[in-house]
Length: 368
Image (tube, rainbow, N blue to C red):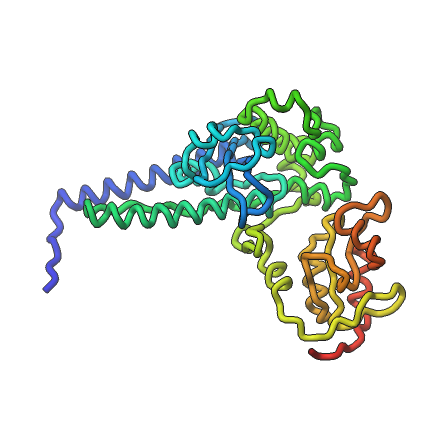
């Protein structure tokens, strides 16, 4: 039989006081975010992909609406695995070993990111690492909490994946604005757009710069790209091109890169039509053709992929000899996927031209 504790003036006051405290905390938090609605994340890792590499440093800075720094945070992280070569991230094995576990910094990270617009350079990778490390930390904290609760009878939240309101990718924004990039690293993009940035090229001098200083410089350059080179909040209000991602619409692909559900699902979709081979310029597309989208386009890649899927074309992240065409706006001094496509004799087509062709007649394909 369940009994209910009778309410007394004291318990009513306790509940009322607790409600006032929670309301005050919400107001304080809203004021914090209003004063600094943007947060930049810069990272160092042991490799390229979140599925196989780990974070060894994270640098967070919150910014006011006009670009002034408000709160700063930096942590060296010990993943408990091979730290990789120091030239990748600027940390010695001893420095990594002395770092903190991500589960010990998760709350600090979420406190700075939650409720803010997150600015990063190369969102699939950076957000992919933050999500992967957060989920790993939550699993660890959940196990630790379960053991502690059995021992002490107390509850403790294991934490959560950070919850930004939106993610703005400064690298993809350069693409949306048709900026020609010879170097896609933060410093390379900053220099291309006229910012005073150190060279992205490795040098002996770079080895003398502490990791924390190097990563903070990257952080500030990301902020300068957004606030200065791209126009900041005023440009957002004018609806100038920005690569803005909805965190709720992102999902890890097989490499741990955070991409849209549409993109991940399209890459993993069952092939229902036989691939008829390369597209021939001037001819209509055929169901079953396989397309690859190069980063060098001004259109949101999801728009290209959605149009392809709607026409029963196949989408692939990887370029192979089975690729029928590559969507790319770059036609000279090719690099990356476009360069490999040209070497293999695979036709290139611009984003606008592809959207025109895919909106036309589609030749029926042969089912698998």
